[in-house]
Length: 114
Length: 112
Image (cartoon, rainbow over all chains, first blue to last red; front, side, top):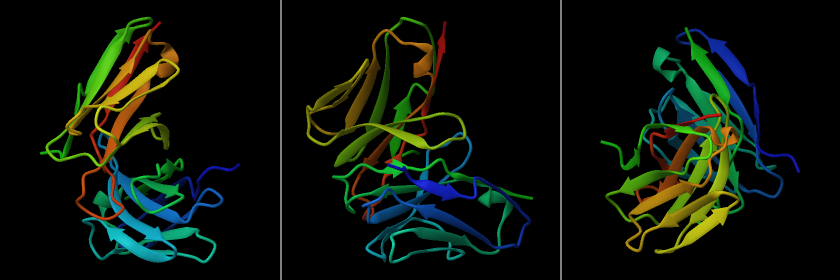
């Protein structure tokens, strides 16, 4: 079975632009989470979606938004990009929404903002 | 300060040596996960621990969650170059629904 897939793998944007990152969960998984990982640090929680509804949100500005589609895939949108948004963005899926089900991560999208 | 502290931050060992990585929280860990990450890539799930005193093993890697559920350790026996990478602990510490809090990671280098 395919794991979590993310696209694109790499992206270069200019300050002020907008970006959309995409994620397809493991088949049968209904929960998708997004994390931001800055170089040298652990991933930071951005959002969790379960059954197309936002179930959790981390400490990120409103420039960050996400949604989940009926097929459980998800998009992460970031507006008005800042240099500090440069990071590896990780998507993870799980079968249920709580901590009883481990997260399975994709390989991430490397975003560089210049 | 970090909500989850990992130690050491980096570790260099000779192939065949045993090693331990620790993950400590000031809050109760409701679910504790260990992941491995190759530089710039995604996280690979290793093990999940939920009950105080629980211990799990996979191949040469053993993880434990202490009785008070505030500390976990990851032990690798007879390390191999294939064990090299970044080890991350992640946990639900009850701060936000669906959120995993991660430690800063431990960089493991294994010299042949």
